[in-house]
Image (cartoon, rainbow, N blue to C red; front, side, top):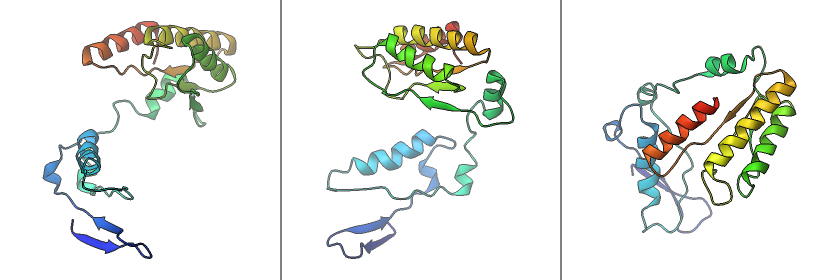
Length: 180
């Protein structure tokens, strides 16, 4: 902590300014940076209430981030959409739908004019909607919407899992279905 100032009008509340040396973080790793800063600080039990209000990343460290492996041009090429914004949404409600109803929501969004839909990060393989069923119904929805609109559509499946092996298995299955 390099500076501490009281919050105006609040008793026993302070703003702490904290700085970390860049050598503590792996170059190009957003995950390492956030888990180091947020995970460690918010895990400090001695603090009863804590809120992160600002995070400033030095330009020298920002330059180590390579960005995503595929940029917007790759997405535009996949969807064959140029000269306008891409329109998409996250399927809601994110939890509670059966795989069949989730697929129906994907279809309705894509048929209704969206370019793509995506799974919420909380959608994995819950008892009410297992990942394989969700993948199959979403692929069916995608292909049906494409056939009816004559446009290329996309649905981005969440393939995260408890192990790397399971995640790869899900990603391979998604690729075999033709998902982006």
